[in-house]
Image (cartoon, rainbow, N blue to C red):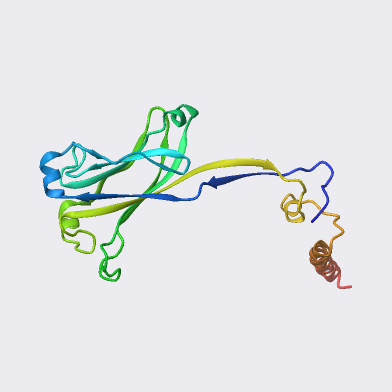
Length: 214
């Protein structure tokens, strides 16, 4: 590790993420639910905790407005305190859950994912056309006995900025500066750089003298 170079400091801004947590929503009796909840009418899960916030899942069994014939899925922020805090960037992934015994080779995964921004004006994010009614009902690997299940993976992402305690040799190199480190790794690094400089000087001298046929 190199000592801090005079007049040089380095800070890093990096994306951070909570551990991904999930919630599974099961829908049973889909045909009857469609009769009770036509296009534009929604079902809601119970509130649940994930990634440090409270959420609910909205499911439109016959599609959200202007999306009839689809299964529409949305994640809803149900945490009033978090809404006031500002924007929350969330990676949301909805996936169909395979029925027990279903072979993955026959029924490849069906999922949709996207990063949404939740705040006091926007508390929902999702997929109005997650899957069509026909596609779901023709997939026995996911749809059985008039029911199916979806998994929602939630990851809250953010950013953090911190000043690095020491300036590394590789960062000085990127700045075009010479590092006078004492550790062995930097000595090898600098010796390689020195060899490159020496080769360039020798080539230049040879070319220059060649012009005068010396």
